[in-house]
Length: 159
Image (cartoon, rainbow, N blue to C red; front, side, top):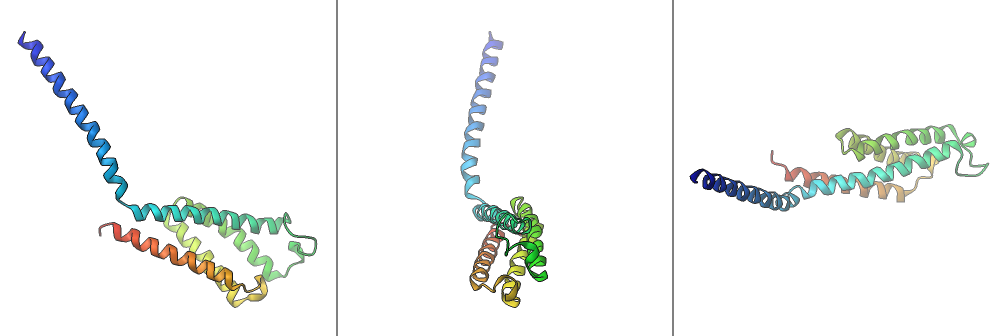
């Protein structure tokens, strides 16, 4: 008779322990969600930039292949500098998009290269794409947002 009550007590103890563990699991999720908020925001920003990079890369490929633009705006009718810059951005934007989506360090580096390259082409070589200060300002805002988010995410992690 004492064996039965010992087994029942052990079973009750195991049931209580399982219930306590499941409650601990639920409460740890709440604590976990408050941690690394800036890191999650940085990853979300990188994913948004990845989608924009895909769109920009596909736009440049559409220019190369002739899907957009008329006969006078055809790729082969453009200057060599325009053709070179367009092919460069068609490739590098899509490579940056993959790295940004994966939130890898090399993705951010490639994306930063595209941002700086576009700003330099717009400012230093206005004959290629027209020298739009709006494009440069948008690139600078995106760069500033990335740097701010990366800094805040780095502050979350202990050294």
